[in-house]
Amino acid sequence: MGAQDRDLTRMLQQGDLDGEVLGLVYDELRDLARRRMAGERAQHTLQATALVHEAYVRLVRDRDMQWRDRRHFFGAAAEAMRRVLVDHARRVQSEKRGGDRARLEITLGGLAREDDPELLLALDDALTALEAEDPRSAEVARLRFFAGLSVEDVSQALDVAPRTVARDWAFARARLTQLLAPED
Image (tube, rainbow, N blue to C red):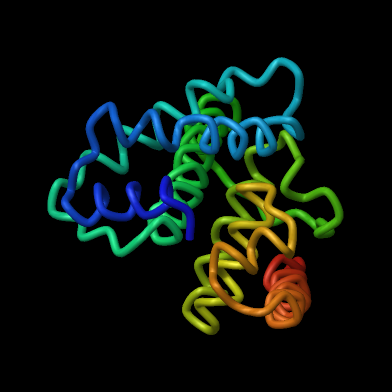
């Protein structure tokens, strides 16, 4: 762990989420948001900068949060970005479709890059169900889908072996495919 990571961990553990912490994490958060937003349609109304800011506001809003370390913070940041995107998709869907959701036959290939709010909401529901069954696989899937992290990056973020991440990722993809399959 580098000096900057130790400084960040110390500040997080002290609950010090002021501008200094933002300065330490902003570039990484922007990179996460850019990777996530790169797959969105060109006319998407939510930009990477807005995604970072909204996610950060959600993170600092909870003053009672006890941050363990850098990994905990970035995991929460990925989750906050996911929630921002899901909330945005819900608003768009509500406006465009009258709030009615229909299950669609979809595949996981490119699912996280889809610009259809219904698909994003279906993925969010499936991730919630997966989390109840296997929390680590769900976390791997969130980091891969919504933060755009590679297997190696997820391995570092979760402090587990890349083979473990690959196994969890394979399970998550298979289980999400089952959960997203249309009901007969």
